[in-house]
Image (tube, rainbow, N blue to C red; front, side):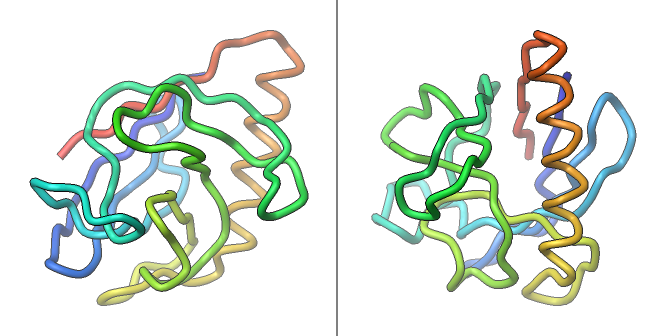
Length: 132
């Protein structure tokens, strides 16, 4: 499975993007601001290609997608949330795009997670390309 996150709105306080799965639009994304120098808990991860696995999140106490080998970051997940206050470097997903937030996050996450779980069960590799 190949996912692509295209960063479309790069503001000083939030980054909004479009997430596609195998070339088809899936949902909107929200991240922290893209910064030239990392500010802990307030910076989007670097653009690039990442392998994604599904593992138990100690913080959320449930299985969540985990981006592997993110330079300078640890524990970067894809999970529900609506604003930059809901993330510390992770990628949030939602069905609605607003000015500085996303909406219906749990619905978007649940639909995406089902696809990721099915790909993992089929033994497919899962990658995420982040472009801006």
